[in-house]
Length: 262
Image: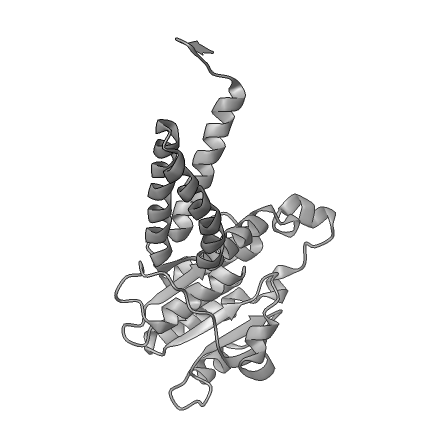
């Protein structure tokens, strides 16, 4: 394609599209956090550097070049959580085990209904919601949650509605922290989860919601958060959290774990 004196190749168009896509995902990762303001400041300095270089101010260009070199290392340190989230996002989206075709080909299509009894979890969540019982229920998928399990009290009990509701009862010594479930068993209770650092969460989201969001950012696990203040259920998946009804909760879980499209 020829526009006046410019020659635009298809590789140039592809380059612009890919860079735009990359910048969009970077923006999504840092949006609402302190890192977003640091990123914008660094971007403005880089634009200033390009202008200075184009004008031909050699001394200022040399100084800014040194700053940009050191700044790249500083950005890696400042954005380590966001970089980790980005790599996790890429890893999850390209994982062969998350693809139905490859899962069947590799023999990873387990009897997920029996391995993850979602009905029990949704029924327990509904009961806790109606009784204004707060809690966090984490459902393990593929990522290893050993370090989070070890942070709590090992239970290793068969999953049941009564067990879940009892663990989060106000009279229970295990009601603080999260319960982690894997393969139809309650692996541990009173577990400590990573806390989401973003400051763009709604004001009505408390510590439990940040913990639920944090584990969904760090792993491919799902976190269900029940508020003891209003009884509302929130679901955190892939670094995103939203309020859901009991019916929506079951649909979302079946879609995520069983690839069922409603």
